[in-house]
Image (tube, rainbow, N blue to C red; front, side, top):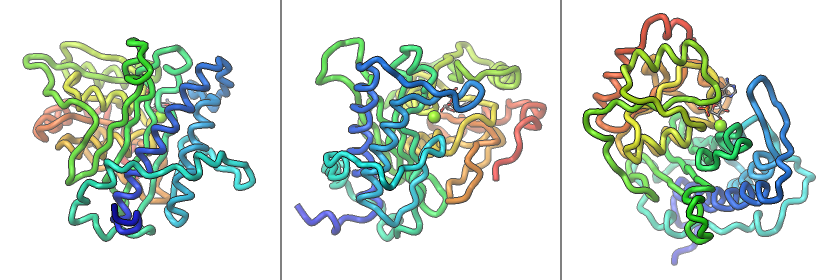
Length: 317
Ligand code: AMP
Ligand code: MG
């Protein structure tokens, strides 16, 4: 195999993120196994656990070691203490060979360190994690190039956990726009239904009004932006509708890239593209509206969002 440095930067970041997310998933599971979640309330309806903190330390340390010049932004604004001792096995985490060997899309072969911002959500769906709804939890690593989501990793630490078979536990899904998305079975949503997925722990009357305006035949209220986009790419829901400014850029960067890699669409509720450059407003003020392909499906939902709902959500910066 060629020296790692021979591979394009973007594919090296993707493969390091695949490896780091799998390691972080182990960290998330081990905190739960020990039983002391160390819950801290960051704000109203906004929790952080020892699993968030430990998984974040793991991902940041590994990515910073591999890519010291790339900007990495971690969920919740947690910063890595430069004096903190990081386990040797985390710092020396190897890149994932399978993703590294994939051919980088032509337009992304010459991406430089300064073009990239990595958005890390070490544990998306924290509320559900604390309530034992373990398959709602994901580890998200989004890779933005020149402000746009281009690649992402959605790792599900508890995928298949009901089976109780160690080797089948957890999965890593990753994608690059122009290359595709891998690690899951792609299905189309069921015909004749309009299944909408939305928040279960951060709802309000505007969120509900937007969902109802989309004429759902069924509403799936589940945790996590990552988990909801998994429902879209696996054909279990027709749209993800969240008319609230509560999601952050680290919640949407990886899911957006994976969804777009299969031809889907994730925007704010106004239908505008979400930006991910360094220094951008970290909240998704305009909410989230996402659909699997075809693109016309996204327009169908966007047209049904009432003006009253849109007026309640500022335009994204
Ligand atoms: P949910 O769909 O409620 O699981 O939210 C998806 C992501 O956005 C999670 O990381 C949540 O923590 C975050 N989020 C959504 N709404 C809020 C809110 N009102 N306050 C804090 N975080 C939120
Ligand atoms: Mg999150």
